Image 1: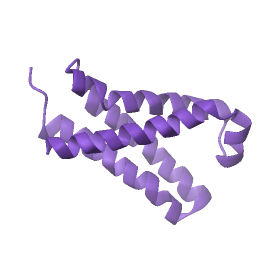
Image 2 (image 1 turned 180 degrees about the vertical axis):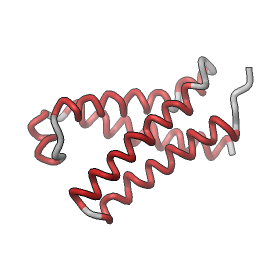
Image 3 (image 1 turned 45 degrees about the vertical axis):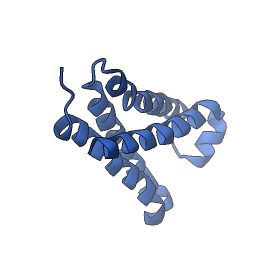
Length: 121
């Protein structure tokens, strides 16, 4: 189970570092053309995504406050619930499957690191 959780954590970190990084790099005008939301809110989401990506890896890896890893994953679940709802409203069911699956993966990590493989010590 630990190996499956590490793989999921690595995937989540890669996905959210890319998504958050792109939202931080792109000009606000370009982002708001693609996503019908306020630009500053998208920047806030980008910061949350990047911090979540770091949070699903580093605390557990370094064994410094490992309880932060399931909290970071739970925060990413909340972001993906919002992403799924917005994608359903703007792009349809087929496009909403990706954020839904990523949210389920984040929920797996949150539950797995909290209940299935709790950090000792």
